[in-house]
Length: 351
Image (cartoon, rainbow, N blue to C red; front, top):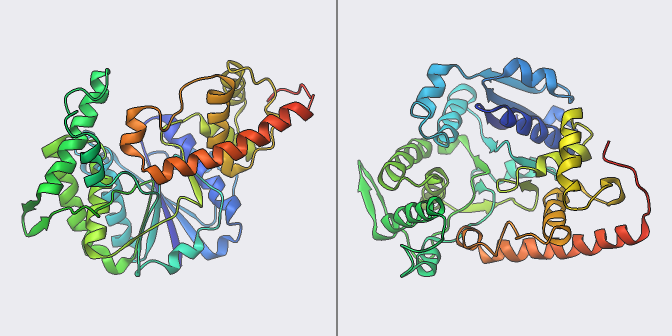
């Protein structure tokens, strides 16, 4: 059997994100006899009560507080829960698994990815490579951005990457990055059960990197580095949207799937209204374009700064190939929606 997996805890918005993501997964893959969705959650009752998709192939495991404390180092590093939860899943199910972040929208059938497990590891998209980032920021380490919080995040990232480029050794493990070493986004993590022991190595590497650099995304660095040590990573970002930077994207996606709550409809109306959009129904939006639509109302309608590209943070994190792909999608969608505005005179609100 094929297993997808989610982890949900913390603020209520993460529960809403998980519901949206699971709904999109099931709508993209209606043949539910071919897979199960396993959810580790602190809100099992609320999750099932609010899901509108068939529940017979959704398995929930409640995360108790003592387990959450162990997975997150007493809630000091939440992203470590990814590796701990995947380890726990494999110990329970002894099966291959594809982990999916809650802030994702799936718009293509993912079942074919299971055929790749074993031959490949799976992650979402490629970020900046280790050597590439260090070249970008050379000589700028102390003055990367005017916001000191962002500066701190950059310095932590640079320290994390520099450690790997110089080489680190601890316990019986050794890592030394090369010019070809890549870092991939961990919004999706696919791993075969035969590679279960690698997760123990990832866990130790996460702990080492985070506590020696303070970098908040140490977990995706650890997954990327360990996976490349033992094989190759296959990317899957052409099958889903990971809206980690623009959380409002969930509202658009939920509207398109007809699961948006009444109070969130008001929230979406206010959100797009401030950019001069009164009628979202006039736009031809595919589920794969929900992030592009948020770029449209923000950049084209609102004349605001882009989420990707213009900020140094976007350039520093996201690979040039990913930035170009986003630009291509945006150009195509923007042209379509401009035509929608010119030809559609309806005045129906999002309500």
